[in-house]
Length: 116
Length: 118
Image (cartoon, rainbow over all chains, first blue to last red; front, side, top):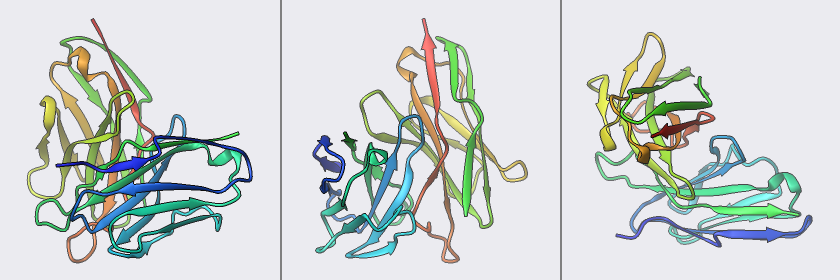
């Protein structure tokens, strides 16, 4: 079946602009995660959804970052007033509650955000 | 809270040689442990995971890892590497809830770039 997809694959924006990054999880996966990977670093957790609600948003760096998952499927990460330090690859992952796969996260290819 | 340390940022090896990529973690709760691989211009792919049971876990592409609770380590090994194993490898940990499921978020190490030379 189809894996996790993310759009756009690349986004270039100017400092101060607003951006939206989209994630389509694997069909039927109730858990969805956002991570941010800066150059030369491992992914860092941002936010975790279980269904429509944010179960853990402790990784969001500040109030310029916000994410939604209104119908429990597609999620959008929103960044207001972008800064050059926001430049990174934003990764989305999803997981299933099915027994045996509950703790396995499947990652999308990422969106590379460049803030000029 | 959890943290992960990958002790080597880069590991160069020759084809058909054995390799070990080192990972140590710290956590105040029991954990699940994972190794992911990232090939150039591709997403993260799960290599293997330790949830419970045997401390030696086998994954895809001939990789294996051993969980050592006393040393808080989860080193990744392969007895004979191929050129196609060239990639970046990430160790990750997830805290375990009282119910035995993951808290959700993964904490990653900084990655180890494995380069296999002919």
